[in-house]
Image (cartoon, rainbow, N blue to C red):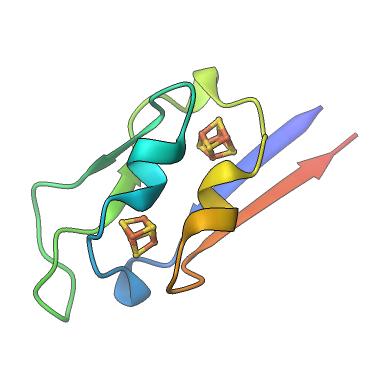
Length: 70
Ligand code: SF4
Ligand code: SF4
């Protein structure tokens, strides 16, 4: 199964909900700023991602997409 997590960094408001929700600690806030002046969420441990979709579900900005392909 191919799992992809895509974060639209320009939409991220750095609330950290996705980071708290991820059971595998895949996500973290980046050390750079997006165009709105927030540190966007980014993927630090892609290989740990199970594709559970929790990050997608909690993001209030709809900045995360999770796709699973067989
Ligand atoms: S899909 Fe699940 S495991 Fe993967 S980054 Fe999102 S919350 Fe974490
Ligand atoms: S939940 Fe959404 S807005 Fe909040 S840090 Fe994660 S990607 Fe950014």
